Amino acid sequence: MEQWTEIRRRVLVEGVSRRQVQRETGLHWKTLRKILGHSEPPGYRQQVARVKKKLGPYVERIGQILKEDKALPKKQRHTAKRIWERLREEGCGGGYTVVKDACGSWSRRTGRCSCRSCMSRGRRRRWILGRRW
Image 1 (cartoon, rainbow, N blue to C red):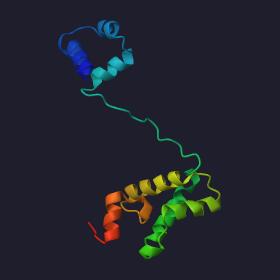
Image 2: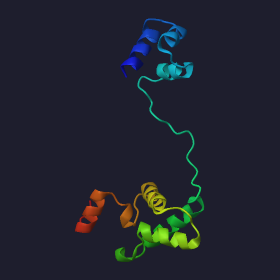
Image 3: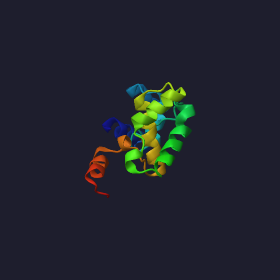
Image 4: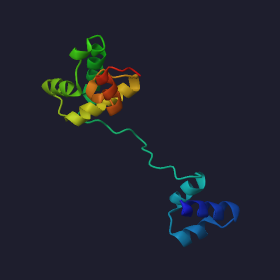
């Protein structure tokens, strides 16, 4: 972070040329452009969402199962493990963790997931104790 602010100060305030800074620091010109464009390091930015190779065709099916579960009593709703087992019967080659993550992302997009295994620890604890916050 100190190098980041030092380079910005030298180029923008003192007027040292970009080439001079590149020679001294050994930075690539694209890196120098990022430093000058952002006051703080921007961090990792994924340009394109990753393709879900194995789960892609079944994402809509997961959403359908979770929507249908909202009408059922709580004890009869699907867990992520049961959803994974049903998808495996239908021919899905993805693992349990991939299905569990898809259930969790569905709940974050729609607001609430009826699947107990997708809950955070605190929410699950409150759910078990019967508290609603």
